[in-house]
Amino acid sequence: MLEVMSKFAPVALVALTALALATPTFAVCNCDSDRTAPSEEITPKFDFEHNATGDWFGFRNMLHDYGIDITGGYTTEPAGNPTGGLDQGETYLDNFGFSFLFDFNKIFGLSETTFLVTISQRTGRSLSADFIGNAISVQQIFGGGETFRLVQMRIEQKFLDDWLQLSYGRITTTADFMSSQFYCQFVNNGICGQPTAPFFNMPNGITAYPAATWGAVAQINSTKEIYEKFGVYDGDPNHGDDRHGANFNFGDNGALFLVEIGYKSQNGLLGMPCRYSVGGYHHTGDFPDVAKDSSSNNLFISGRPGRLHSGQDGFYLVFEQMLLRNPRRPDTGLNAFTTFVLSPDEDKSPMPYFFNGGLIYEGLLPARPSDKTSLGFYSTIFSEDLGSAERAARLASQTSETDIELNHQVQLNNWLYFRPNIQYVIKPNGLTTIPNALVLGLEIGLTF
Image: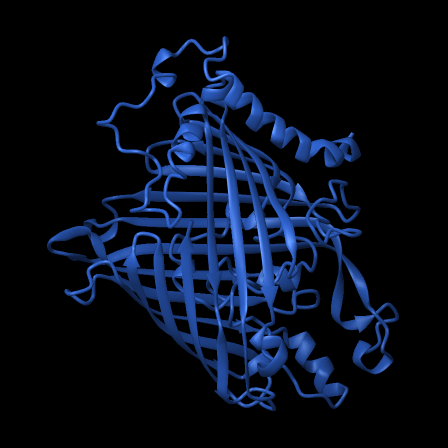
């Protein structure tokens, strides 16, 4: 069945678009308000103020009225390291992202139901891999394959006045768990996107953009401020050949389960907006030892693969808190966040401890009220089991890697920004044998 889906998914996507255009007043729908054409007084969904390509001569807003939103963006992050690292150099890389959102209420009369399809195209080279030699990329849009990729095919439904929300299909794990609205005010991948340690501790066992896998998430909103979230995902998303994200088969290395409980309020600590969440995960698959082979010998000496352990666990905390409001724009000001991830089994977790945090000030400069100034860091501690085995093999021992980033986002208009940034990588790849690296970069973001 999944093979059939993989063959006909593109056809189905085209068919949905055609059906939406051909049936603007689908008979199942009983809500006339959803079919009313927009009057001149209603603000259009798409325009040149918010999108570089505008409304496509009205066609884009017509699609929106029929239940189809097409959006896209472009991001590039050229950077170089004038000092430090394995060598000095510079790299260029970019990402095109496109999304197609189908409102099934407008198309089929299915209330509170949407279908999201996202696509990515990446090109370029990694400064970390080519010149610095550190573990976590200083450019967050590198990874997932520098090629065209189908990312998500995600259905979302809401029930009981939003008390219950379900998401399922081909979905991305860290779009739902371990996330923060402030992460991508930074350029390095130790902050932007998600905490990175779980990807080292569960190799090929968890997904982040631009990768996705089969999964389902249920969120219960117990109150207006408290939620509980439960997720299950295919634990082997990169099995076989999935270079373009179109291998719809299931893997053979278990499943990944996650739970998160959160509190979100506009009047939290200090009477200001906040979000606090705590979560955990359990993977039922097998993962290699970081230090010993199948015969319990040092794998750095024997050269053999690590012995396999059954299962992997981890826990995390994510805190967000506004600290200061701008007097004339109380929805903006100084915000802070911090994240802590623990994977306690150091025999199978190369990164058992991970921290990041940051400060983001929107409107720091009165003359530039929409600009954002950000200071953040990540620090990851490598396994002591790993370090001991490396020392026993007379190799350089990995201890910890830290990156400090300062950037300023110049918001030129609603659809274009520039983000010059400076980073300092301390002990790249956890090694004192690689000089600390200074990174100078520029991120440019454009919304189509």
